[in-house]
Image (tube, rainbow, N blue to C red; front, side):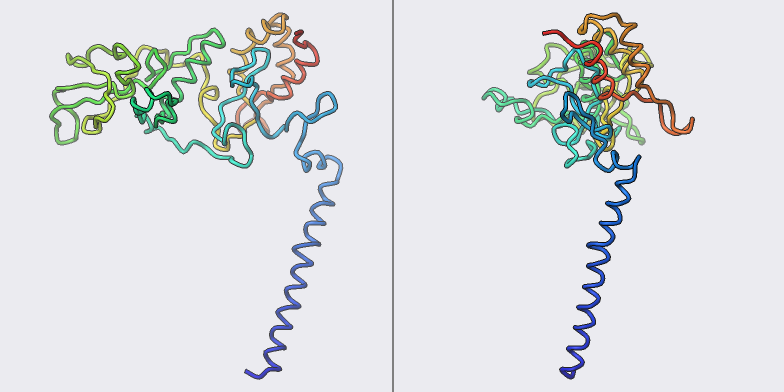
Amino acid sequence: MKFSNFVRMHWAAFRALLVLTVITGLAYPLFIWLVAQIPGLHDKAEGSILTANGGPVGSRLIGQLFTDKDGNPLPQYFQSRPSAAGTGYDPLSSSASNLGPESIVDTPADPSQMASGKSASDAGFKPGLLTQVCTRSAAVGQLEGVDGSRPFCTGGGVGAVLSVIGPRDSRGYVLHPTRVVSVNEPCQSTRTPFLSLYEGVRVECAKYGEDYTIGQIVPIRGAAPANPAVPADAVTASGSGLDPDISPAYADIQVARVAKARHVSPDQIRAVLARYRSGRDLGFFGEPTVRVLQLNLELDRRYPVKS
C-alpha cells in the first residue's frame, strides 16, 4: 500500500471518529439533558427524590428498609417487601434471588463450625426459597399479630419437606417407605420433626453429611389455610429487589401496629393510608399498590413519635 493511501484512509477514519464523538459523546447527551429539564420531567430525571426536614430521604422509585441498626423493624413505620438486592434495595446490586418453585430443600450448616461460634450462614447454611418464605411469614405474623402459618411450612417456620426412602415403581414413586427424613429440620435444631409418622413410618430429623437425595422429595401441605393472612409480597422479593410499593393487603395488616406505636387510632392511620393507595394503571395494568415511603413521611408529619 502506498504511503499516501495509508494516510488518506487513516485521516478519513480520524474524521469519522471526531464526528461520532461530537454526536454521541456531546450533542446527544446534551440533548437528553435539555429534555430532562422540561417541567414535569425534571423531577424524574433527578431520581424522583423525596425530602424531609430539608434533606433527601429516599426516592419514589426505589424501596428502602425501615429498620433499626440491628435490622429489627421499626414499629412506627409501614414495612417494605423483602429485597434480594445486595443487603437490601441496593441499586448497584439490583437482582432477584434466582431461586424458583423447586428450591424447597435447604443446605444445612456444618455443626462443627456452629460449635466454634460461627453464624449459620458462615457455617454454610443456605435456605431454599420455601424456607425463606416460611421464615418470613412466621416473623411477619408475630410482628403484626396475625396467623403467620402457610401451606408447606412447619410450625417452626421452615419448609415442611420429607425425603421418603424405599423401593420405587417404574415412574419413580416410592411404593413402601422404609425410612422418612425431615430434610429441613437438622437434629441439632429440633427435638422432634414436624410430623411424627408418614405412611406408618417414623419421621427422623436430618443428620449433617447424609445424602437424602436418594429419596423421593415430598412437600407436606399441612393444615394451614389456603389463603394465608400474610400476603405473598410480604414474604417474597421482587425481580429487581428495588420495588418501592407493597400491596394493600400487606399494608392493612400493619395498621394496628403502626397505630399503637404512634398512639393514634387505627382509623386515623387508615385515613392517611387511603391517600397513598394507587389503583391499576389504566384500570387493568398491574396490581393496586401502596407507596410506602410517602406514606411513612406523611405519618411522621401528622403523627410524629414522641421520644
